[in-house]
Every structure is written in C-alpha cells, then in structure tokens.
Image (cartoon, helix red, strand yellow):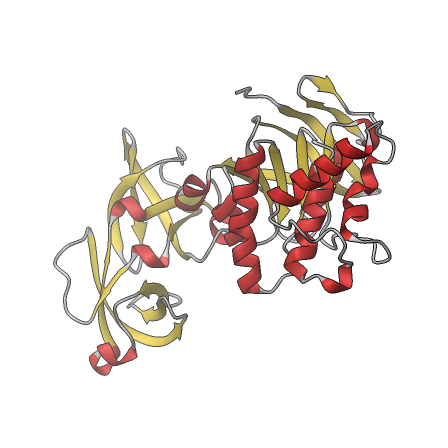
Amino acid sequence: MSENFIDIKNISRHFGSVKAVDNVSFSIKQGEFFSLLGPSGCGKTTLLRLLAGFESANQGEIFIDGMDVTTMPPNLRPTNMVFQNYAIFPHINVKKNIEFGMRKEKLSKQELDDRVQEVLSLVKLEGYEERFSNQLSGGQRQRIALARALIKRPKVLLLDEPLGALDKKLRDEMQIELRNLQKAVGITFVFVTHDQGESISMSDRVAVMNDGQIQQISDPHDLYYNPQNIFVSDFIGTTNFLSSSTGASNGEEIMVKIESIGEFSIRNKLNISENNSDTVCSIRPEAITLSPTPIEKGDITLEGKIENSSYYGELTSFYVKIDGAEKPLIASSQRFDNNSFQDNKCYLSINFEDINLLKKE
C-alpha cells in the first residue's frame, strides 16, 4: 500500500484577505478512509474542492497516484464527489440518475446495465431502478448519490458532509453502511464533516482543521487521548481544562502544579518547557472515577460536591465542585445517578496517565 497515494504539498487558497486554506501539506494512503474535520469556515470543504478541481490553488501542488492534478479540470481527475444535498435529478428515475455521469463513456447498453446493477448491489438498492427521487427516503437518496459516484470507478471518492441532511438514527446507521461500503470497494475516501463523533467512528485517520491549517492528523484513538493542542482537545469531545504550571523535568516526566489538586509528576508528551506558567491540563470526564464513598485506588483522590448533572441515557455527566477550582469538574458515570450521593457529597479519583499537559494558546 502506497504511503503517498494522495500528496498535498504547500496548498493555499485565498479569497481576498481570507486564507481559507493556508500552506497545507499532508498525504493520504491508498484505500484509506480519511476525514477532514473542523468547525464551519475552517477550510475543510475548500480543501476538498481543491482535490476535486472545483477550486484553483493560489500556490502548491496536488498529486493523485503519482499524477500531478494541480491544474487538471475536474472531469479529467480520477475523483468523483458526493455532495450534501445529493443533487439527484427529480425528473428522471434512479437508473437514469446513476447513468448520468457515464453519458460520454463508450459503453454498450449491456455494459452500462451491468455497471448500474453492480453499484445498486453495492448500496443495497437492487430493484429501485424505476423509482423517482420523491419515492425515496433520505437514506435511499444518499445511497443513490453514492452509486452515481461509484459507477465511474474513481480512484478517490470525495464526500462533502453526505450525512448532514439525515436524522440522527438514520445518520448512525448510514455511518456503518458507508464504512462497510468503503471496505467493500477498497477505494480511497476523503470525507468532510464537522461532526466529531462521525469522524472518529468511521475514519482510519482524521485531520483536524482550524483557520485554514491542519492542527493534527492522527488515528481516532490517538486524536482523542493524545491531542497536540488545546483546540484539538476541546473540539474532539468534552474535556476539563485546569490551569497549571510546570516545574523541573526528569527525563520523560515533568512536575506539574494545579492549584485545586496539588503538585505531581506526569509524562511530558509534548516536550513542554520547564518553569512554564502558561499551561493547562486536560482530563476527559470518563477518565475521572466517581463514587459516593471514599476511593482508595488512583494517583489523585479528591472530595467534592455535585452541583448539577446531565442524563444522557448511556451515562450521566456530573458537575462537581472541588475546593480551589474556578469551575466544576465534569465526571461521567454509567453506574450512578443523582440518588446515589448523600447530600451531593462525592469522591473522585484520577490517574496521572489520563492527564494531558498542553500549552496555552
């Protein structure tokens, strides 16, 4: 498997003074499900459109499978794109919608029919050839859009928030189906989304973008548990930020002081400097063990009082006030509810390995 199936080198796209994509470089592997994740206006869709050829770069180069496509028009690139609104023609049936992009291909009627059946089978919509868009559900229209893109057998499929118009339950189902489809066809998917859960549940790797630049590229697990900066830690899920300062370092570890917790030594994953007062510690809510009785295990043990809670079905998030802290700690639990704690008193436990030291931005 090539490590550099798609190479993006120093790509920029500016709209006047707005740097939508600003000197971005990275590579995508062949057969990889790669997501571009970020808030609205971060540049992810512009970057996807640069890959598709719908936008022209101000600088930089784009290579796909060793071919320089930087100035190549969209119809000559080995890519196809699926849009959020599906762009299905309402006046023609499913079969003709799927065939639409093949009009200039010199295929016999039998070859074209075989291709249509092949992609309908892939998206599990055999027998829908004669239906029109108003006879399809949102999920079915999304699959037809996928089939229309896949019939051209692109080397790269570009997907611009294709699940954005679906309700949550269908969206969750389609995430699984889309991932299974990608594995079945084995082609490279580049997927744009602003939904953190969507990206980390589906992708081999995720590129988090902000202000036109890549903040971090990692596999979903590493992205969640080892963020490289405050933006990534904050954007990927919920976390607690505690102001901190560093002391002396000792090999891979460094002394850290948090006023509300104390002083301790943790891994210095990002090689943050000694005696630095501009740092924060990030702790995920699920990394904090919560109990109505004192906890003996754990590197840090604390007492607190529950101020509020939010019930989400599979877990409850508790907002816990501890002495000296500016704001409550968020701790998640599947075991306890509000009735578990007498007079709202609780006990917390945190392990050093679950604390990420980050620079203030």
